[in-house]
Image 1 (cartoon, rainbow, N blue to C red):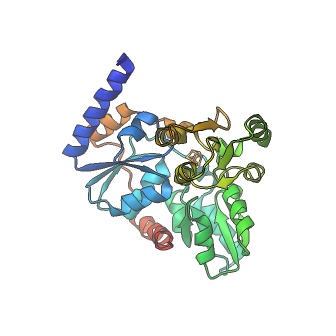
Image 2 (spheres, rainbow, N blue to C red):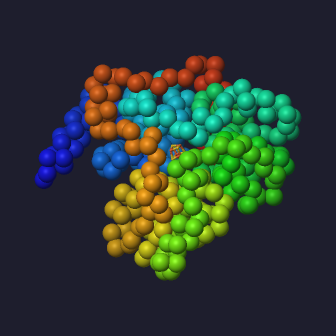
Image 3 (cartoon, rainbow, N blue to C red):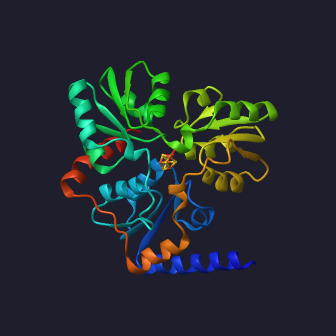
Length: 308
Ligand code: 13P
Ligand code: SF4
């Protein structure tokens, strides 16, 4: 074992010890660094992690992801201590909308247009929304509403994807994820030409021109299911690089090609094992949500979790 591997193992052992001492559960998003995913109690997409956060009986949740994910855990479980090991882990898409701007938009659209907000948003934006969604359930959430017109925030690409699959009229907010939105269709077309046997899996945060080239559009965890089930031996993956860890681990005989090398979300990579050790040791970087906002945001998240 090299020095780096040695250090990783040492930090992981220290974290395991601290998790036990603190009666804590460690959740990791599918984009986290390999060594974090490797040791998490649960890894998953936003929907799976929200469900885990809602259902755990641990006293402390260490959320290895970005701020809005830890905030969602705090919304669902106010009696638990939620730690975000590195406070720099934000989400630029979540910052593309504010509660104030959303209130203005709601006034413009009137009361007959419910607001569906992607969980990639702040608690006060969730509090202004009728229901939340994730990339795994966006279409089901929209279809569950008794309305012909719906406003989807903040991701315009997810909204456009839903619009392709529903008869309802989708109004959109012009937010986007830089990591996904900047992927060029020419790049995917080039890879398809080079590997004609490969299947393309894309996250719905990618632009419509990318989704046009995809064989399958799904959430991050949806990609694991697809890669396992499909008979193809090679896949072009249009989402953040962290997804490769489990794809390769679970399908050693298959090949996974990241559509572009720069599909790396800096926010998802900022958290390190050292941050987790520090946060658990000092019980620092606790995420809380003001009670009046939390209660209203929880209604939107709970409604989403009730949609099967
Ligand atoms: P998933 O819910 O598909 O894991 O996506 C979360 C995310 O931040 C994608 O950029
Ligand atoms: Fe936000 Fe995009 Fe990073 Fe996901 S990948 S956390 S949407 S910036």
